[in-house]
Length: 620
Image (cartoon, rainbow, N blue to C red; front, top):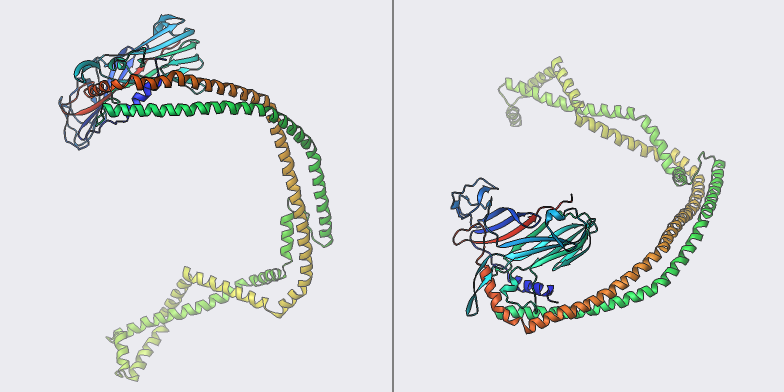
C-alpha cells in the first residue's frame, strides 16, 4: 500500500505542531482567488490584501504589481509605495496575470475515454474526475552540507460537491467522502512536489499529489469545486531541529500503533456483540408478538369498561340530586359541575358568613346617610380651619394699619405694653371685619374649594368606609344577631356534614372514573405502539443482520488496514524516514522565503494562500 494517508497526517501533525510566529509590526495577509474553468485553467485572478497595522502607523509601506487596485473598506490613498493609513488597517483588491506557484489541472474520463469538461457535460456512464497539482516555484535550499533545488512546498485541500441524483457508487482516491443524503462531498489533501522534495522512493512510500473521484454518472453535472493551497503549514519558525522533529514523528507513530491495537480489539468485540444481539432478536420478536396480542385484547374491552363506569357515576349523581331536592336545594349536579356546586352550598352553611353578609347589606343600604354625616363633620372641621386662617389674615391687616406685625404685637402684649382697651379695640375691629359679607363669602368659597379637593374627598371616603365597618361590627355584636346565629348553627352544621360527606363520595368515584379513562386511553396507545413495534420486528432483525455483517466487514477492514497501512508506516518510520530530517528542515526554510504573490514592502512579513473556484459543468 504505497499511498498511505496516515503518513500524510503524521507529517502534517509534526509540522503543524510548530505554529507560525506572529509578526510584531505591519503584516501583509494575502488571499489569491483563482477563477478557473471546469478543466482547472485559470481565467481570472483576483487578489485580496489586508495590511495589518497593529501599531497604528500613519503610513504603511507597500509594494504591489496588481492592476485595478481598489481600496475596499475605506478611502485611504495609495501613492504607489505607501498607503495613507491614518492608524487603520488597509484592505484592497486588484487583478493579476502573474504565474501561480501551483498549477491545477482537472481531467475527465468517461468509460475510459478522455473528455474535456464541456464534452462530458450531460453524459452518463462510469466517470473519473482527477485533480492534479503541479508545483511551479523552486528555490535553493541547504540540505545538510549541500545545496539543492526544491519546490516551494504547498498543502492543497480540494472539495467537490456531488449531487446524489447524478453520482452513485462514488469512490475517492487520496481523500474521503461525506454523504448527507442529498449530496456527497469528496475531499482530500495533497502535497504537490513533496515526493521530490523529500527524495522518497515511490516503491517504499508515495505521498499523494492528486485526488481522483470515480462514480457512476447519470446526466453528468458538477456544480463547482473549491481548492485551497497554502505554504503556511511549512513556514514555521522556532527552535525545532531534525532530531526533535523525528522524535515527534516516532512518538506519533507509536501512539498510532497503540491506537490501532485498541481499535482492532474494539472492532472484534463489536462484531461479537452484534452476533449475540442477532441471536436475542428472535426471542425479542416472540415477546413483542405476545405483548401486542394481549394489549389488543385489553383494548377491545376498554369501551365496555368505560361505559359501565360512566353509568355508575350517573346513578350516584341522580341519587345526590334527589337528596338535594328533598332538602329544598334547587341545583342539578353533573360530572362537570358537582364540585363547584357543592362548594357553593357549603359556603351557604357558614352561619357567621351568612349573617355578616346580611348585616353588611343592611348597613350598605344606609351608606349615603353615613357619608352625608361624615361629610358634614369634615366640613365643620374644614370651615373652622378656613375661618381661623382668614381671621389670622384679617388680624394681620388690622395690625398693619397700626404699623405692627403679629409678632411685634404678641411680644408687646406679653410684655404688658398693650392695654386692655387697645386689645378690645383690635379684637373689635377684627370681629367687625369677619362679619362682613365679603369675608363671609371668602370663608365659604375657600371651604367649598377644599371640600372639593382630592385630599378631602379621599378623607371623606376613608372615614365613611371606617364608619360602615364599625356599624357592621356593632350590629354583628348585637344580641339580636347573636341569637339568630345561635339558632341557625345546629341546622347549618348538620347540612355541612351531609354536603361534605356527599362531596367526598363523589370526589372518590370521580378519581376512579378519570383514572379508568386515562388507563383505557393508555391501553389503546400501548396497543397501537405494540402493533407498530411487532410489524417492525422483521425490519429490525434484518437491520441487525446487516449491522452484524457490516461490523464483521469493519473488523476485517481494520485488520487489513493495520497490516497493510499502519504496520508498514511504523516500519517505514523506523527503517527509512530517519534521514528525512535535514530535507524537512531545508524545505521549511525555503517555504519561509515565499510570503506573497503580488509583492510586499522590504522588511515586511506576510503570508499568502490561494483559493481556486471552478466553473460549473452544467448538463445540456
